[in-house]
Length: 102
Image 1 (spheres, rainbow, N blue to C red):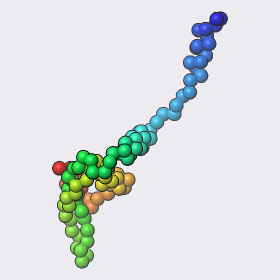
Image 2 (cartoon, rainbow, N blue to C red):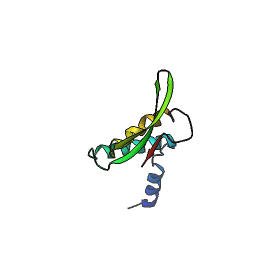
Image 3 (cartoon, rainbow, N blue to C red):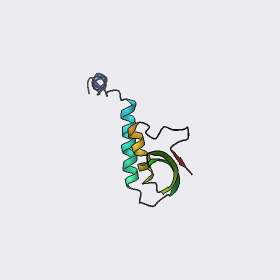
Image 4 (cartoon, rainbow, N blue to C red):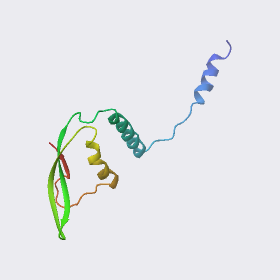
């Protein structure tokens, strides 16, 4: 066959250039993959204990309590989901983390 090398060279130049992905795109892709993976995990598998900082008002007074929760691998991300979407959330008081795994 004539011109084999030149044909290969032309084909290699025609390769599609992908746009540079931002770290936000990467994190969204990772989150979607993780959600799909967790959707296959049955409820009740891999139980873990968490302590959640729960802030509330009682008669106009701000109060905080540590609430213990036992969640499976499938439900635990729900505890963190709203916090991640809001960009930190929480009451902002003190320096203790809002959620701690035990």
